[in-house]
Length: 571
Image (cartoon, rainbow, N blue to C red; front, side, top):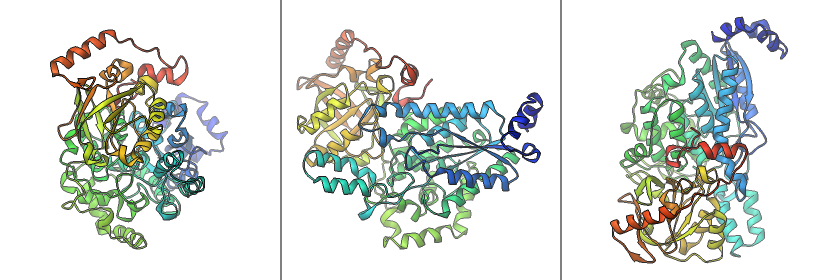
């Protein structure tokens, strides 16, 4: 064991551990880090200590000695509406760095990684890929929906309606009280839910354990099972990089398409792959999504809260439906290949237990998870757009875009911050046919915050939702829906074409053709050659903006982050 080797090199190690109450027997066993984002930071992390304790029980039962470590995450929801959201993406890399420090500064034979939400879970996946010791992921599951199935992703639209005077203060207050009735990830397929599903789809979680109900004994049992499972991986010396391959990421992307997952996965999966020594890019998503079947009718793109995901069988049920499109021979943390895991679940009572919970909703399985041959859509759920406005690409969740906006020519309305843009929307300064640009909000510009309130203000306006687009080098909340195009690369702070857009430029959006281009100036069409010359002249006159950040983590992040379409990680 690595632990034994380092104990012989560092005579202080044993007495320091004894100072924590460890016995000689504890010292002689394989040592396993239990890394979590536990903290009173948000509902996705506040309940994780019970899962940490459960994982520790499993590790002890498997013959190991657990050690609890913590890297608390922040909440994107709590950071919304102010400059706190600028820290969101940087927090992912910071947590991953801390995991690297924790594991490499002290000897461990394996790890259980516990997180629930938007940045904490991708960070743990990045970190465990870097340190590459036997590992199992457990998650904090999903909260229940509130009365009348109210869920948090609805609050942005409620806020916009309240500010426009369309609902009363009493109604808005009720919505706030109903949105988060318990701990767990928010009950829609936002980034938190998506990344729980991605962790299991990569083979790093025990089958069927993503998005379990956050309250109750089932999720604690799953965490305890994760503790036992990691001891089997330690015994076999089976590490994450032995399990996760390019084919594993391709499986995850196919599942991402089937569930209409958050566009933030296009940030996180390439960053995670990078820490596994694997390269995936925008082209990987485009290639796989083109023929993927979209099956899951869960919010924000669908009708039902995410708590229903487990009731129809969770990730295994989705994988069964798209089985013909998956690599079934990839390894998983069970020590078995994916196809064997799926067969084992079918032979068990797993689906019967799920169906018993589904029966209480009064819904049929097909109302939530479609069959493969009767999909909601058969061309995936996201598209990568390129053109003279986004030479390195931009992302749009076309499954959430009104059909009227799949092909359109719009007038540019550029803004250099989200604050300016949302003010224009709420003051009715944005009209049908406009393309609202929010720029200098990429990783190097401002840390790549979400444009949540702006997208909600647009999507909650019946007229604007079907007649304008929001285009940004920033990103969107996993709760967002509507005509939103993000991750435009290169970003404005790097001198990308989005920085050169001027008022009343003509913008062509063509999702079927995967194009995002400037095609005219001041309302007048130009040839491609003329447009290239105009952009070249504007670029010659463009002056880079001084960084907004002169110290601290955001200075470090903005100076070293890769482009949005590369994953926005610090390189």
